Image (cartoon, rainbow, N blue to C red; front, side):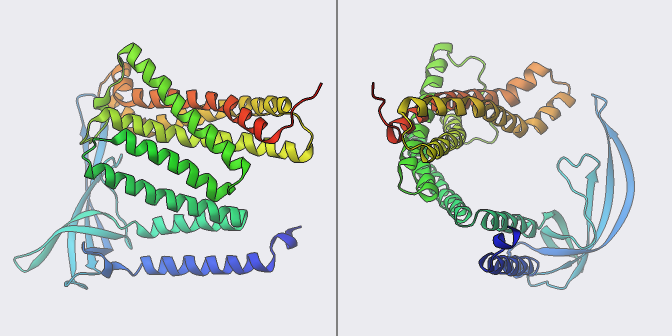
Length: 371
């Protein structure tokens, strides 16, 4: 079986992917000339004194001083050696520790009194990002073959569509956020399912259930917002928002729940199609009940996964709030309340999708029962 899996075609694909990965990593380690910002390599690290710090809440940390000897890898001063200072703490919330061999960005590169001076502006991370992208592509293409390639294509197309939607939103100064991202959600669904499932009944049932379930969940949440006058929802906790936060929050909630509902709908439809292949004479009633049972078994883990994703996104900021003397209630309100609302709205969509996708699948695949 293993010999059959590693066929000649897969071995050739593996060789091509390995060569592409090696070429990409080699390029990212020698592409400094393509950057306008100064890039340097750390050649020597000298550690300075350590200073103990504390605040009014008895949080203790230690600051470390580093003197980095670096060599410029681009700009007109390529090859120039200089020394820069770096301060980092044990917790490293907004700073980093650097080591010999690291490639870093520099800022404010100037020559003063015959010596070059600069500030450290962070790691050059393109090599890590390229490696992770390559690893994902390698696993998808080797394990899933054509299906993995289509999945990668759908991600690329959706990323381009998302960027286009943001550009349109910026040009309209945020006046039609829900319209833009509502259309984007429909396009996301159709494009993703067309590329992965093709123009089939399976795609039609999954897309219909996904779109109806997601927008119905958003509609129910808007009714609840109107009924409760949005008490307990703190839009001001959305950081760095330069537009009206409420439409952006709703658009974020719509796109966040869309993925979970699509995942659940795809699983149920795939199961119903397998049942249809095993028993072509299966009735619509049996298919509907089977789809509902599958939905019952997967909607619990899906809701918990979404909740954990939303909570993990706010974990570090919540910890910072608590460590700085804020109460649990205030910390939750300013960091986790919006994520909780998003997970609840997504949960509504997940629950609604179960009967919807089961019904669509039963209508498209099943036979009418005869007495």
